[in-house]
Image 1 (spheres, rainbow, N blue to C red):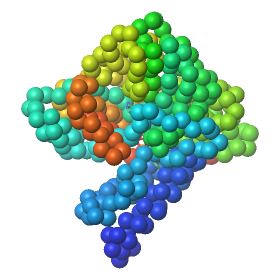
Image 2: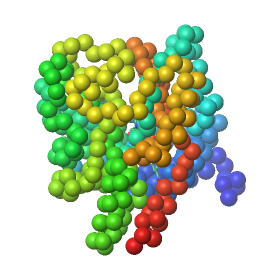
Image 3: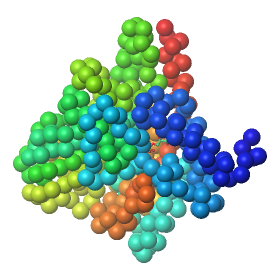
Image 4: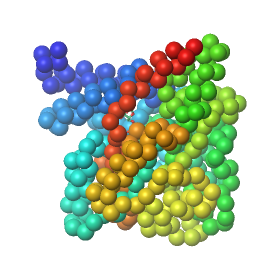
Length: 336
Ligand code: NAD
């Protein structure tokens, strides 16, 4: 049907559909289509914008991060924006990613990458001042998120105080809040028993649990947090490591949880080996992942590479082939 439309008309149509899906997913925590379908539409939008750059507008979903903050929560302005990630869908995309970096940095030597599982949950920023947790926020649209401090304080593995004494005076830790698969199954059985709608998948359950106005409800949900980067850092007492992986290790020393599957790889080839290794482990993990993330490990290189509109140039998410998520809902309904 789309063949009958001009590129401009199809683009407008795609923007309207994607904006609606974004609202359902990010604001209502209630997606109506599987991620695979969403990704297909986004891909089509990106292809049109690539072929017709004059049609790309600054408010296109391709230029924006996430969704607006819910007004029920106090708003938090991120001093350092919380961005999204570019995607690689196949090996060629990964090789092109590494080439772009080498060309931009004008280097030929192998690049070190921090390799991390792409946890399928909700991005959260946690601010520590003098080692005490003082504020937590959702990513929101990347610039403004929701203040969810009381809810994040209830998550079992989030330290309310950092360990040791050499942490920066102000330290913003970023990471993903997830729900384990086992926790999700148990929660949905309980939801159904209570006559409530089951959650579509663990990501949606984690997001819904975190954005509760009553922290007692959040406290009863099986949530976990895993750190994956630093945001704002002020008044360091000990120099920060010069690599991303070194900084993650510092976070771990200060008591913050890291996922176990972290590695450092040299060049795109080793990254691809990591991608296949994690892909093979995926079904046995206790939580959902939808891919892996590769980040240039040297912070100086990251700084030189900088950002584009919605994502850093120094990182990429290599997605696993899409799983039809909406089927989870059907599986659960058949258990009743
Ligand atoms: P994204 O989820 O593809 O990637 C960015 C996010 O990855 C970060 O914000 C962070 O939360 C997460 N992440 C996990 N592990 C990480 C790590 N180790 N390091 C850094 N970040 C890590 O981007 P997005 O913009 O949040 O969402 C886009 C995706 O969301 C789409 O590809 C689609 O799959 C899904 N989506 C689905 C619908 C729908 O209706 N089904 C709607 C909107 C978005």
